[in-house]
Image (cartoon, rainbow, N blue to C red):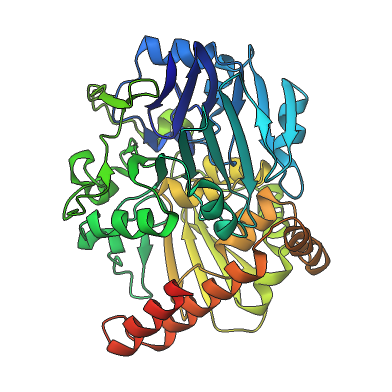
Length: 444
């Protein structure tokens, strides 16, 4: 047996006679404080293949990629960790498992016919290129965008006969979307537009030079009664190829097995899981619980440690158990208002995983005098701060210096992102000017 299968949310298992590598196994748990669950069953055979894999590669810290209740399946494997600044994930797993930190853009031999290259990016994510018998090449981008590495990876994969793109593609619910304006009106997320994904698949396949794509890193269902309303924004599994008309490229079904010897793909069509909503109380969250004085101090100390925030926000307010706690950062007018249950909130602060509160989408977020948590809140708190351990200005300076020195295309990708952000904020996307400049940028 030689090939690979896609499983669950973001698990890729590669075979060379037997299973030799699995990525990001989320099998048992309900991450984001019980807010996410599996929409499709993971078979006993799938689980056996993960357990018996020689290597497990972990991309980043989101719990749908590194789920604590799935750790029990990893003890027979060698854990491969990308070389992120801060090494938070590596230091944790190195205490409990046999671990190897793998250097970005360096071949690592998995078996006789399989080798990989890992690419850690400045957003604390990582991509994985898997080569099978120098014929099949998988570009597993999971949740990331290859920041600092895109031209290098595109050049690396372009000459393989079969080039598979695996990346997060959906309407846009896999982020913090439980947003309200200052008048307490729900702000409909981009996912509410249900824009067909076919053109996006074609764009990203063309961009990366891939002739196959597999829907990946996008399979979850909201599991709590206080987040269940977000299920209407989830992309149905059969909608991924909507308006995809490129006859030279193929979107394969989301879950299946690619036989590298025969060169064909067999869908596995897993069954839907049973819908059984959980109450917040099942995970320790009672909305009437208030913070004690020590917890209030902990909350203030945590957010005050992110020096970048005071340059863009005046105050962060938490409403917990009907009581408001204000954290003043500066004299600015921008304010962020969070309404959250005590237990999950304090757990996220103690363990420095505040992104789990955002992506869980049961916490209510209100923005006053500001349009978004991007780019000056979410990445600085959740990515650079919690995951990258860079909170002060000096730590942030060293953080980005590291990725400048350890990313082949840092400046090129940064210029591309800044150009696109400028266009989006200054020129309407439906104008000829915007479309023309975007065309030129893509050509460059």
